[in-house]
Length: 457
Image (cartoon, rainbow, N blue to C red):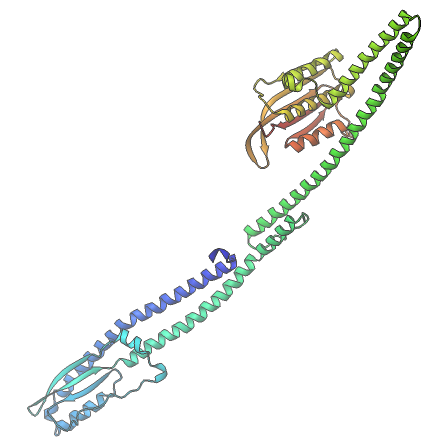
């Protein structure tokens, strides 16, 4: 039940319980203090009444009519609020007896349970007297009804005033709580919209500083999610575009290189068939066509190797990343003897996984291609070392490799735009959870990539 209540309902319920408990404790305190108050008032009144009676009746024998004087004293004393005086004597006519007048208003009379709680039984005191040698006594009986009525009236008044104050405090506090928690409802609605894809949703920072800070953080989160979704969409479009470009390049190479070679092979093979079908085969012509066929096959194999190299580096799976990189750098060095290639591949790199290995290889290959085509550099430094990666907002144990290719060339022009190769590499690395940065200066260009390990590693 408690778990199903909203935060506003929980706060209001707790506030109501606290106010009710405080009021109940205050009323209980007044009720518990009522008994000692009534008892103290009882004892004080009886003591004063007894001392007063003893003083008055001391000189009754000296007055002309002691009986009449005593009856008058008893009648006058019965006008007191909290006691009644009853004459106890051997006089048979009972002229000294009087009834206690009831001056209590029924509207102010306390309930029976309250009377039984604070004053369960009446207090009586017998004061002995003697008139003309005849012994007698005056019975003093306490009647604290007025005192109990005053206490009960105070309790009822306290209950009414306390209840009114509690209700007012509850209403004021509920209104303050409702206004303070209003941004939470706005936050909930905004989160629902963001969950449905409304990443342009923004919440006005309002309410207490804590909730205002949460609103600002939610706006930042929505903006970040929107940017991430846009990047993801652009990345998907870019991947499709790059795939189309790669397919066109492969189709062009197959058409431009494989087509002529196959046509030449067909022509030489047809010539061989005609020579073989002649009555006197021309051995020299057959040898010539056979040599041409061998040259075309060799050229076709080289073209096939170049296409396969673009699709998948030869030897990467069989030899491993280190040997494949050594072979790649050696080929670049042989093709460009005027450029010094410095290599530093860390021995503690470890296994990074098939996808990461291919990404590292392609990044270095693309960076070197740009260096040898555009940089006019005389020295290139290639570094591959292990690194710890930041995944999201928390550091994880998922390691990776840091790849750095630095040249001493002319650098990039201020208006230079990245080509399809490095753009595709950046998007590929970003998709894997890494990063790629390109810095250009007077001393050349530095391409640095952080490639995470495969999840399975």
